[in-house]
Amino acid sequence: MYENKVTRLIINNCITIRNDKNEICISNVELMKLYNERKKFIENKKSKVKILDKINIGLYLVECKNCEKEFVKKQYNYNQLPKICDECCNIFNKCILCNSEINLGCFFCLECLDTFRWKLETLLNTMLEGHIKQGIKIKGLNNPSKKDDVKDKISLGLIKYHNSNIRLLYENVFINTGYSFKYKNSIGETFRSTYEVKVSEYLISKKIKYKTEVPILMKNNRYKIVDFVINNNIFIEVTGYANKSWKEQFNMKINELRKSCNNIIIIISTKDKFNELFKNISNENVFIEELYNLDKLDKTISLANNIIRSNEILCPENEVIINV
Image (tube, rainbow, N blue to C red):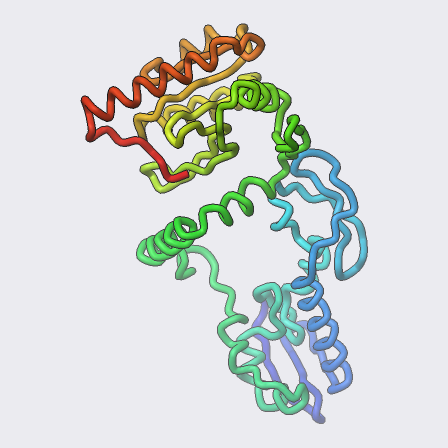
């Protein structure tokens, strides 16, 4: 990018970009070559990502659609993996003519477009009117998306969309992440852990109907995924409660569920985690069962149903989430 004042001219039918230190002349042939290269890059950027290997959870080996080099990228949602490597992006996020920075996927900066519009449109045989706004790169607080009213409109639009497409939200945001649903139970359902498989097998053996991986809308307009839901009002959460981050996220999830509704929550974990669970999670409307001793789980579910029926009679104003 030029640091000094840039002058844009047409000399001998060639586009000339000049500053205090340098001068570049671009002929019609060279311009067409640069334009076609950028056009190919944009088409490649819109194509489907080519994943060569999954190295770890959220870590992928990807082939660049432009230079065909391999690169590693960390991204938990593989639908958002880049198709182009960073090196190619750094090359193609500059104006074809003056090399100034523009939005990735554009051809010319606004200044070059204004100066050479008639020549470019004639030579390229295309209208560039719609390209003006695309070529402007607005940074920082000047970006319209940073304004509070625009943020509110975007948020409301997303909430409205996701409320009407809850299953699509679940599939795109949750299932299509680095998590692998590779464990199966006896009826072919897939789960993320053997713990969940064990619980599902017990519910099947007791002929208790359930739904799995259910997205629940909270009062803060966010969704939480519940492992098992019974009768649309009993939530079962299975956890290994293994490390600090896992514990914090699980505690936050349970607290958010309890703030948003009066549903009974049954937590299933290993016995050595009981003390921590009792310490960190309030026992109001919460039961804790042992993973390797599920004999009493059906009685706990029956008790939870009785509590819910009693609450419906005594406290009909209590909110029970049934949007499943």
